[in-house]
Amino acid sequence: MRRDKNDTKWKNVKEKVSKRDKSCRFIKKLSVKEYLLLQKVAPRKLLETLDHAHVFAVSLVPSLCYDERNIVLLNRYSHHNLDNCKHPITGEMITREERDSFWKRIIGETTFLALEEQATSKEEILNE
Image (cartoon, rainbow, N blue to C red; front, side, top):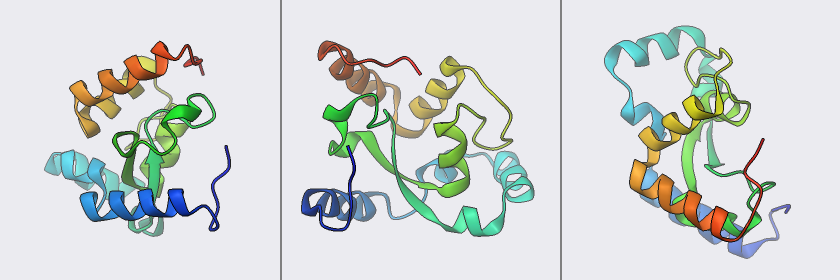
């Protein structure tokens, strides 16, 4: 599912998420030590750029594309890493379970499990 500037539904969801989050939700969850490490390893420009990131990828779970619970503001560095099953701070490869634990930390375990249940109840593929 491709979203673009002509997709008014996507534009509205992005605006709502931006108003809700205001800044990177991942950075808000970091300890001081984690934040200092992130600043050390990540390019500044990528930390300053915010993306509307899907917890469950649209390519795998298209029904969650516009679900605001499935979208958060993330810095581009951590977003790219999580999308590629890499540690959102160090960039090292991690397991799917480790990646999911970061998403649970970012959006909360209850929300993550609810989204996961919604995705699997529609019999959508979650394997990456």
